[in-house]
Image (tube, rainbow, N blue to C red; front, side, top):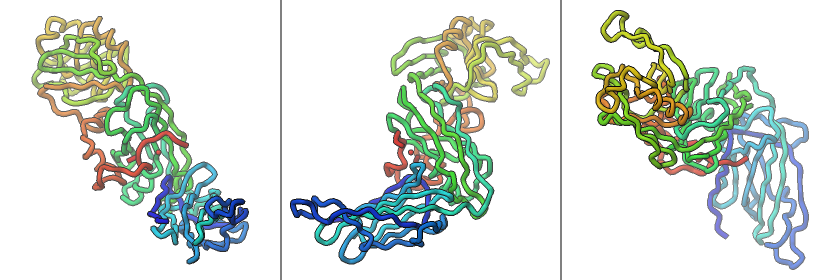
Length: 419
């Protein structure tokens, strides 16, 4: 029988152990060892750490399981009481398994070791143990965003840390423990926007009607000598229809698509010379029925020819710096013909009301053929989609510089996982 290396991944973890056995007979009723129930493999394997009941494992030390010459290890699973698995590697010849990620502190683990002897008879040993408490009281806490609800296909997931993480190795520990699951499953990855903020997005927009779950497995995991992971609240949200609003600044038209089909085309005006609308993909941040817009808030001096102070209705916000899609009854004569705004996308009041009613947070709003600067990837809303997938992966502490193909544990999936 040939054996190839096997890797089980899930969350960070390291360990020590206290044993509990589980065994039955070595042969089946028909005398075929391959049909036998697993026997107690306690005499076939050895493992690192104390075996005395009541002793706690040091979460800074790895777990190792070895087998005697007359047998081989076929499988090892190590899981804590919250469902987190320990990553590990099994030697090609089945002679040894060792954990590849640290254990969580103050956790209860169950390790199941499956073996077979030279005759092919299966064996099993179940080991249980507790890890000791963290040596430091300092905790890293994570807050996921946005708020629970339904969002458009362009909505990134955010993770805000309460402490700055700059060390690359520590970032890898943190990122590995921040999980995003989805149904249907899609490929995705975290991006370190700063030492305290990460964004997660799929390679392509979320599929319509996806369910998404973001959660942290950091609780009890050692990040540094003085910092351990804390508990966090998981996030569940739903993705709605695929809504994309594409504004062509050259033809002065906004085309609204829903689930791939064109639903509406609206004449608009965008930014005039000197105030050109940003090119690229933006995401709806919020909707406001009424906004008072002043030129002074975007650096236009009061009293200048470009100064303005206007009541604006049906305002759909796409940047924090003040770019909206909104009603602009004062420019109806230019809509569909010329760009006369200060950077926003203006349309008639009736069209703006329709647009306002048919878009939601997270929907995609894209501008093409403008002479404006590209939309910023970060800091002014969600411009995340303006980075191609290769550049996005470079922002990850786990996938930067690695091939695009990923192990299953780093893809988004819905089970009780980024790249």
